[in-house]
Image (cartoon, rainbow, N blue to C red; front, side):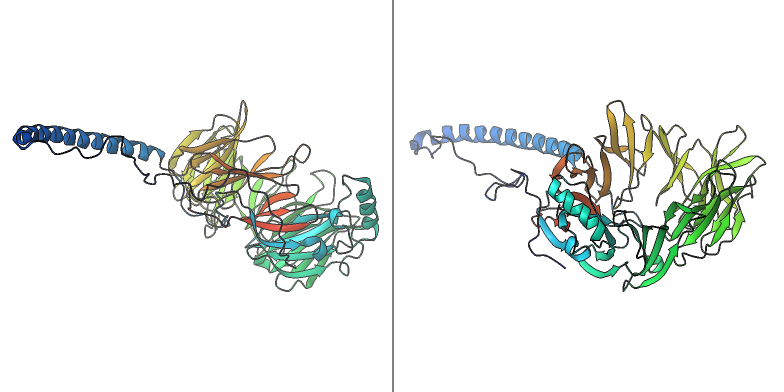
Length: 530
């Protein structure tokens, strides 16, 4: 249901420009100085002499005016070039487009009463909302009963609701419009679900499903719902005598560790979201290693050999071609959509590590010796983070050439930011006075912008000209989102709310204390970089 009385964040005092205030750079009225009226006519006989003097004076003044104008123009050009903001181009492939909110958003595009929609018999103040990550503009929302309330009366009501209330409903929301595609009650699928447990939801458009994991009296259970209508398609329950622990989930693939309390006795299984009960692959990994889950499959070290298991077929192909004896695979990454290569970091004995691009047949397209402890692949290059995480090197995806290297000044990590420009590489580096967020130009590694982060700050989204940082410090202050100019690092605005503020994909959403969710927008934009 959509509510019209949408709550929104109060506008920051003085944030808007007065309607009657002139635009920056607009022409201003000029007043003539006192006594500047036209002088009375002079006697005729003195006109020639005075005319000559006036002509010479005017010529001199004209030359001075031209000179001053030329100097001013040159100054404007020099200064203008130096202050022109540098922004990246469009978003990187596979990332959502984030709203361009250069002013504090004060309006609600839509509002949903999630408490009434998902838990109508639970007091709204007791309902905790758990949204999934947004995929293709869709967010799955579940709820649980929150016992951590401020007043005793509400706490008592919440405890009663935890026993008798129903929080087993799940909704699929279209973030752009606020339309609720469907609501499904899991009570018939998992009647023994725990009302206090946190439901974990995942939208998997590639499999046509929404996955919901809940805790039951018999252990964890996963329910697969149809993405179009919300109908239950499959229920997968874990065995109490052989519990499975989810290790990772990427796209439509899940990696689970099955049974055992140590590496020697554990088995791993690869599960596709399209069939939760029949694993695509099962096997063991060498002691001290954990299979590396990627979007297209999993890399496994077994019996000292590396293999890549295809996530569609379960077929394993060795990654041994072109490798010397005693070579170990340290980490791997996949490229953007359409890139079938696997990018790996390998080491042979005590030699220097290498980065290689491995084609679907297991052959190496290129190998480059470079110190690398982690990889991240972008549209433009393969980013190799040094083992101590203090520097990053950009390798050409096509042939492995080193395009540039950059010292990051301290331990750092590459941060993929939803909505980021394809021209940006965002990194978070640890400085002496705290973490710093910086955008590197992917063409040459130059640092385009940097801004300090607090200990509870996390970069959550970026548009072409704005980067958004979320502060989650529920102990001392409410959640907040701050917007910074992506060229200068200047803070544009900060919003605070008594509810939870977060990005659902590229949209800024606040969920208030009564479990009502609102998408915040700016309807007063006057320019893309204003």
